[in-house]
Image (cartoon, rainbow, N blue to C red):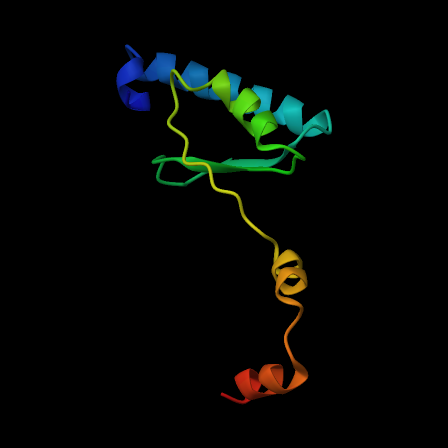
Length: 100
């Protein structure tokens, strides 16, 4: 279901967006898993960032919005997590990359 098709009027959609923003703000302030939330300036979508121990926590949080919003959820690594996972860059490799 397209989010735009689920509302009868732009006003109804606007009210829903305000409720969603208010809920996101409350979740961020509560210290839960949601760390950041925003929208694209063209109104075509947005993003949210969760930091949780289990993916099911993200699923639970997003479930209440699924009837109105389509989500593309991806797990990401920070730069430090990637460095730690790969064992860190070798000093010679880092110097070669910097010189290019």
